[in-house]
Image 1 (cartoon, one colour):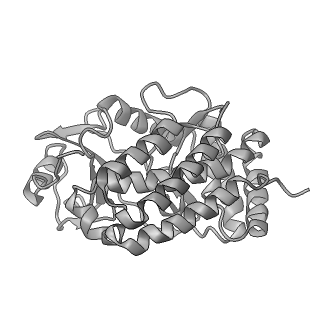
Image 2: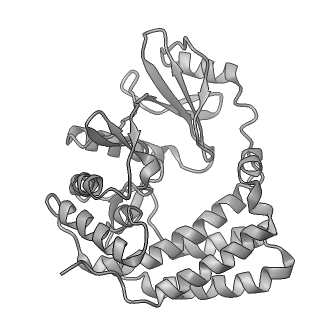
Amino acid sequence: MSKFSFEDLTPDLILDAIESVGVYAESGLLALNSYENRVYQFKAEDGLRYVVKFYRPERWSKAQIQEEHDFAYELAEAEVPVVAPIKHNGESLFEHQGYVFVLFPSVGGRQFEVDNLDQLDVMGRLIGRMHQVAKSKAFKHRPTFSCEEYLHTAKVHLQKSNLVPMGISTAFYTILDLVIEQAQAQYKNVQTIRLHGDCHAGNILWAGEALMFVDLDDARQGPAIQDLWMMLSGDRQTQLLQLDTLVNAYEEFCDFDHTQLKLIEPLRAMRIIHYMGWVAKRWSDPAFVRNFSWFAEDKYWEQQILALKEQLAALQEAPLKLLP
């Protein structure tokens, strides 16, 4: 388990870091909802609002972070709406007293509605435009979605954490292993492109009349369907309609490999298990103990057993298909 702590990231250090790139805060620092990194919004003396993000050390290398930034610039150059990092003296990645950080313009807007078919239509076109740019080349430094990281390594983090209650540990790991086995069997021969990587409603905003991506922190190589399936919600019939809307709009800008529809449930299983492993891995961070207190409760793990059973059933169903 990592022993790293953000305790040294004091308000004075944050302000000093911001000033080191020629920006001077006028307001106080408003902490934004981020657990992996530390993110703050503020107003500067130039009258503009900014967001500063301090990356969690040892998570990404500088080369991997720079690829995230460069991908954002590629998208912006192609007029794909994205909040790209601010450059200072030609650089976007800065360092101050051991902390690596980045500045963004602060963008306001309303949240994307995943259950709105009209908005899903717009979203499908936006992802299609992003992928048209993304497939032009591959990441060199960023990782690829893999069963090793999202299933097996996540399981190791869970086991090391000792957070799964002893009384239900056998039941939990029995169903977990079955889901891992099924997901790995189905997630193979995958064609990958550069992805947003965490394309859910929280990372998308209506800014004015346009949808906009606001966070590429989890960008990596993976199958195109990864940036589409998290838009789906509700029962199977509802998801079929949503999927049909998304893919038809997507294909206005980018070809879609329909065989990737069979990857939706393995990817969903990978996200469920990776999420548990991620929280377990970060449990030494006081912010996680404070904000994920339910993670240490028996009730949560009992619910996860049920959720994994439902996911195993979903993995055994026929994949979603587009409407005829």
